[in-house]
Structures are given as C-alpha cells and as structure tokens.
Length: 92
Image (cartoon, rainbow, N blue to C red; front, top):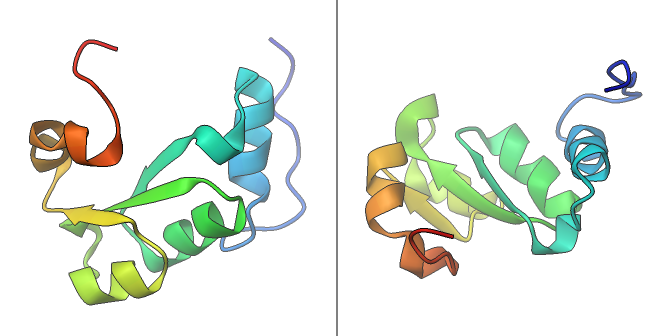
C-alpha cells in the first residue's frame, strides 16, 4: 500500500472520509460512518455518507442528531443489536 496521503483540512471537513473511501475503492455515498462526536458526524454528512452516532464520546443524542446522525446508539454493542435499522444484514 502507498503512504498515507496528507490531508489538507481536519474534521469537520470531509477530507479524511473521502480519502479513506478512495483508498478502499468504496463509494462514499453508500458508506456508513460510525462516530461519537459532533465534528465527525458533520464531516460524514459533508462527505455524503450515512452518519451513525455513538454516545461514547460525551455528546448527547440531540447534539449528534443535529450534527447529522441518522441514528444514535449507546455503544457499538447497541449498534450491533440494531444493524437492521441502518440497512445492514448480519453476516454481510
């Protein structure tokens, strides 16, 4: 793999998510970004990805939703129990 690309801007700019999608060969517009901060979710929204919030970062549900979270879960285990709500089928 090539060296990590230099990013011009930090979050909430979408550079990081766009670079990651490009490196993975993924379409960012059909990607799911799971994050726990307002800045991360703003960046995901600006990248046109589906943002999922986790309450593990110290922000409240209302703050994460206002930043663009489609859904908000307590922690990764809670998200795992509700994958069907974000369009992911178990085992895929």
